Amino acid sequence: MSPIRRLASAFSCLVLLSACGAGEATLSSEGGADPLLHTGSGTVLESPDQGPELCLGPIALSLPPQCGGVPLVGWQWESVSGEQTAIGTTWGEYGVTGSFDGEVLTLTEPAGEPVTTAGPGASHSEQDPFATPCPEPAGGWIPVDPSRSGEDAVQAANAYAQSQSDHAAFWVDHLAPADQEPAADSPMILNVAFTGELQRHERELRQVWGGPLCVQEMKHTAAELRGIQDDFSNGAAAESGLQVLWSGALEHQQKVEVGVVAVTDAQRQDVAERYGAGLVELVPGLRPVR
Image 1 (cartoon, rainbow, N blue to C red):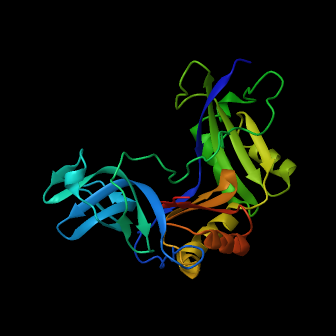
Image 2: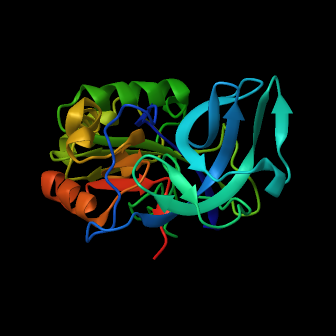
């Protein structure tokens, strides 16, 4: 078989939240002394209703855009370039560094070019998180019944998976030759995960899906991961002093990602003790300068 390129799609749950009102952050140094230096990148916006802020949460794609974020002290538009202005609002993309006290970022150096940072669902390793884990069968990923390998069959298989109490994850691999971009109608490998009874689930899936299939075992159900995600929205973040920006139940990676304004080592430890090491990944918009 020649090499393949993958275009994967997953069925997961992503929630975007406002940066405001999701719990107060406490970001002084671990010794309780002066605030730590933090750095972040994104849209800096100033409107007639608010001073300059670094947008860390959702941005309304209106003209002008609207967002909520971290107020910037010491910001001067005269010191940067590339900004846009409409209806009294000025905005642009920049990287900033300053002293963060949990509420405002006081700049300690001039703004620079923005640096790409992680967002919802971003992969933090070189390994493809959507790669099919099952070994390729002898003869390749060949449909056993091409008449049941289209979108309708995908939806039927997904409906079965969602109906099972031990359902863990569901995603699709679109395959194409290495020198081509995968198309929407490219051959698909269906990846379905459960916490047990794999043989039974494979038999049931084969009743509706005739394309390539990989049935695998995972530790946590999709319901467990969504429960953790809901727990953050319903008070766990505030209890840990975290300001939540977004959250996503990444079933195929067996974890919940939570975007936060900033996070300390103590807060990471608190979340790990609450849910288990590695189950929740906190992705800060502001990162400490070590």
